[in-house]
Amino acid sequence: MHIDILTLFPEMFDGVFNHSIIKRAHEKNQFTYNVINFRDYTINKHQKVDDYPYGGGAGMVLTPQPIFDAIEAIKTKNNSRPRIILMCPQGETFTQAKAEELAKEDHLIFISGHYEGYDERIREYLVTDEISIGDYILTGGELGAMVVSDSVIRLLPNVLGNVESAEKDSFSTGLLEHPHYTRPAIYKGMEVPEVLLSGNHALIEEWRKKESLKRTLNRRPDLLDDYQLTKEEKNLLNKIKNEEND
Image (cartoon, rainbow, N blue to C red):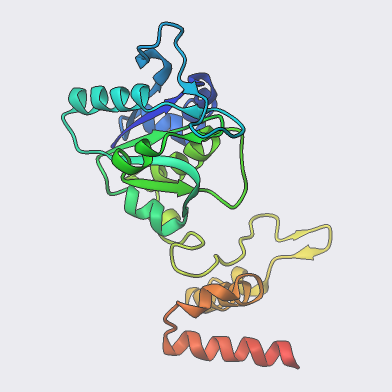
């Protein structure tokens, strides 16, 4: 996969791409990226990329020319048909399912805006996806682009090393993930559940399924509305509800 990010603040992305798992994935050529200051594409003699909105109103609006020209240059250079993602609070709320969808692509372009908003022609004629990371407003789209990029890159082949790490994530299975424990078995009087020390893998797997269902029921019951329970999971869920009602 190749990722291009259009932003007015390229230095903001140094921390995301130059540390930890993402850095190692890049060093192993599991993905490539380029952070582009779209101000470099403006034909305005003062290098302005924003202007007052027609009709009046507060704030400044990003003009279409620099962004259109930057993306045309990227597409020509890469000879590709990328997914062009506009980071926008009005967009589709980002989910794990969307991350998995984008992880199948060869080329992604993120547009990170600032100021009051984008000229509508960018949204209408240029982008393929509009994504929001939540119902709140940030000073720009950079943090959103970082979140989406990280979420997608970790799903690429061999980035995490163990394929099960991604497959069993919360939301990937449709349920929240079960609790995790590690050494020591007892810490300040707090004990690891005995079943995890038993060595009985069948019982451990059953415990994990039950705890995953319990955590989902208690924290995100809405996820169960669209989740297709197996017969075993239905029995476990009934058992959980009975235990909580006792």
